[in-house]
Image 1 (tube, helix red, strand yellow):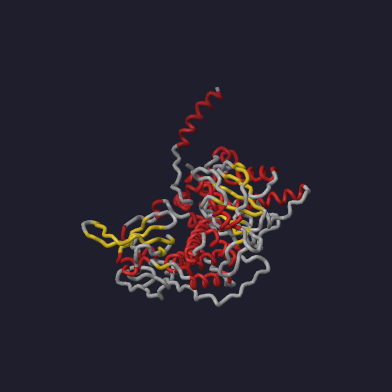
Image 2: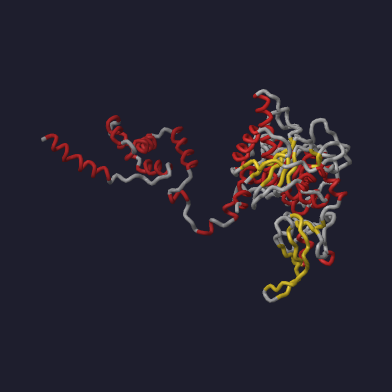
Length: 181
Length: 325
């Protein structure tokens, strides 16, 4: 089961689109599990939110074995800098774990027109699949058409696909099959 | 200490420079140490214990894979051969990142060589060897999609690298992967101040392929001594030979051979032949007794028997008689 939790206000239409997209991508039941407040401890001095801290401090959601929780926030996320600097953060997931967070701050503006909303939703769906894919032990993929391709890659098209490629899909299916309780 | 095992016991093992951090003596290990088992990932040393195998007691080092908790037992005297090594230091990891972010020269295009070299790198190349596999296959994937085997190898190598980087930098694996891909696929407009990358992993030299014996191969393996009949005698001559000789028959339009060939063609549709052809040609074939058999042999089949024809005629005769009546 995939549970979606909003840390900020989320449009019901977007939530419905997201649940449908995640269900189609992983074949798992997906539901909206409500709202949670943003943990103050995770906020940094530059106005961003530390993604790792957020996942550690956020109020828990009631889950069962093999459940995955996806938090969605509109605040920009930050990561700890690495040897070559800080990678741009579109989301963060506990690899093979239970919790992941994505931000809508880097997505194209939602706007009011149908076309802009569609573009926003598609990108939101892609980032959600990407984050939940990490929860199911998927690594980044070199294929720019796959949802597991890094979100900052210059090879990524303006309106990227919301699907997993064959290898990632089969791997996730295998993991889900093995993990089913 | 490193390198593939010799093919024969007397063959000396190739000596290559040891990977940094490799463990050569079991006494270096203490419970709680984190080590890297090649191709398995980061493990934690549980302790040394004796295991009785076939009545002999062997001291074994027990290590536990951190990823799934499975236990691996390594014989103490096999530790140098296995390639157990310490988790990469921060300096090593920094070198790996500078290598990942550097421009890559042409990837190896021969898949057999590439696959073998990558397997060697994963086994005995240390963290830099794993990074080389990831970068090499990633570069290749930009040219063309990877075949299934290499896609799996790429994923395994990435998995090993992510976990070792995560352990070395004390960050979660998800973040370690972001660091790796930030170096591999930097966003547009980002440039790194790179240091010269570390020296590439030295791979063991491999013997060259033996040239394929084109002629006299059968003589070498002693097929003649077995006393087997020739293929032509068995009627199993190859198609090439028969084709070549039928071509020869076309060049020399000898009457008998032509007749034989025509009869072969006519065999599936005898009625049509009877209607169109006079009976003279079969007679010509009879004049050269070897011709028909030869042609049939050339076609790779034994000569056809004419036993069915009289039977068919017998069956046809009463009908004619009835018709006459």
